[in-house]
Image 1 (cartoon, rainbow, N blue to C red):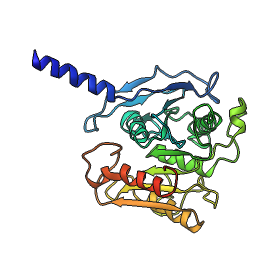
Image 2: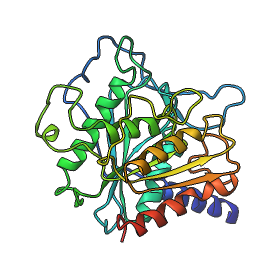
Image 3: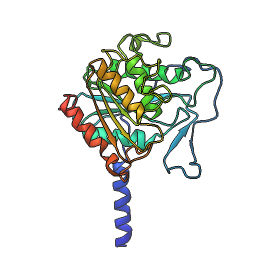
Image 4: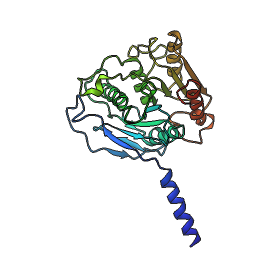
Length: 291
């Protein structure tokens, strides 16, 4: 009996620790722009042999944002873009788990479920994802008063391909990549700050020169980087973007870990690389994003 009681208490605690969204909103009132055909049903993909056991969400055709509000929010907000090579979304350890950490800092977290996989015959080839990101940040900023947010403290955090998506929005935000839908598209979709964790696709092949898709300027927001030196997605991606920011006088902080590989997200057993959330939290405090 005592064992059963302990088991039930443990299960209850686990459920209590599992974050629940305050609200979930569809990004688009109807079909998302540019959608021409239906995908198979949205589903969690089974990991392939040798892959880490993480939740992989595929066939996303109905993009959404899920808002996680902490008790006594401090006004800061972060839109989270999970990675997944623009094929799937690592929706848990690069999504909801990140929201839980941000809530511990009293930061409102918004998990962006953007469209994957890439659509055919689009230019740029991540156009659908950029549209979703622009719409998401604009929609969040338009809800600032309702959600008790500071409209000047809305940032974006992305992992791997989600890091690329975040960098795209940081450098391409003056003009919407779709026709205006409503008043949410009249407000800025520029992130006020960015966090790039093992970002991909930022530099030209075999160089540290940022790709032409990412025109870094003095208006690009302050950025925090975390990357492992042994990551097969080369840390030159972070180094190149960091150099471009510094060249333009944009504040940036970068942490390169000797080991950690790719995709460590919020996993606790990846050595010093697992400390990036604390380092990022310290950066947000030092820059005044979190008080």
